[in-house]
Length: 219
Image (cartoon, rainbow, N blue to C red; front, side, top):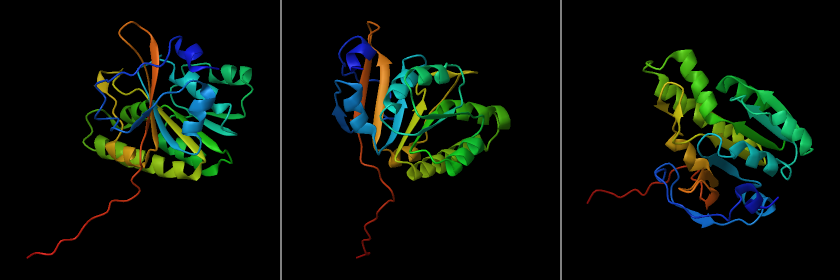
């Protein structure tokens, strides 16, 4: 499958308002799903964009080249199993409703790859559980995201899908924790341009596993 088939137009470089969420990196243009696979295989990936922009469809096509895959579905609004069957994927499909459930499945699977679809859905379930006005919500969200990305290290490839920039349920905006981005190798943006044409933008990043400090003595 070519990127042109997916996007119906060639990849178009677009600068969006999410620059603070997707720190600058090396931008890469892809010509096929196979070449895009080479960018994500063996990496920790965040794939983001508005609802119904094609994030799940693109991810399932990538799964064809990523081996045995644990697919954690927190949105449950797309016929993933049906498309996986058509594509003949080696997929372990699991619907999830909490970070805890997702992390338990990640600890106990034998899969080579994990797909989390989506982070926004997991955050939504957390909001439903603790309440939008709970002062601990931001802290819990950050802690869960940090634990989630650390578990991704156990997999050859991990892809976290999220609806960055999109309003969610009651109007709150879902944002990925900035700390999580420290561990990400590749960021993929799927969106539409002003004329309604789909585009894919890829950025390679250098993950920061631990901060380093330079000590300077006082003169």
